[in-house]
Length: 310
Image (cartoon, rainbow, N blue to C red):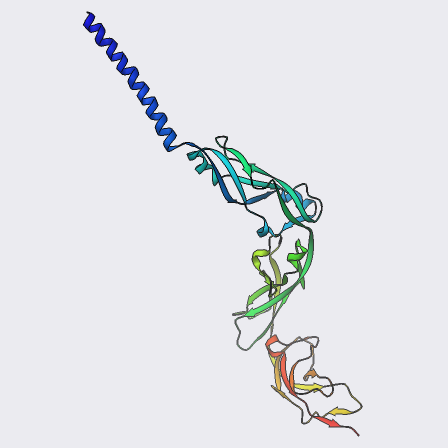
């Protein structure tokens, strides 16, 4: 009986010792594989919030690429920190800004959970550049592609300009809006809605357009079909006191131009006006109501001959 009692006590001691060893082993493994650490993460981007409210106040943030990336020092389990860094956000609330200029604004760090804590941020404030929100009328440019044999087609926009909103500095980068029209297969006059794209000035970068707002991307374009007429080109100038144009010997290249003429319009020739005494060069044909001259036909070379007046 005493021997059995002794064996029972030994088994109990072994069980307690096994539990202690297991707890110690678990603690050692936990500490060595997933210890509490403090680590600084660099290059955390600043995220803007409250921009809708800022626009309601009549302002927008520009130069987003100039916003700094901050460093955040955090503490917690190694595994938690690894999971947290990609979901940690540095928020900058711009909803309360009501002026333009370089505005210094406090930041806030948003963590995905409470298992880690923020020890330090490289800066508690970030400066944002704010401009007034304005609207500008941007000219519409229509460009044709394709061709229709035996026809002249005029593609014209219903509107000369379209309104686009944004910061003035960004709107100034936009030269025009471009509507591309494929005239292949068009045989009768018709109007259609076409999408447009932004044409930027030579020194502008599309990635800099952070604030541009476009509510309507469609423009009505009318494609007017003409039967082509080939008319002679006549060089004209104002009469002067010292020189006069010799219209007989003055030449143009080409000598004629293909145009489209609206119904009811009578015209016998197309003029090109030059200054007195000017020399050989490229000149634009004069515009005439009811006559459509395709852009590719508008430029001619003029070789003027001047007579001296005594």
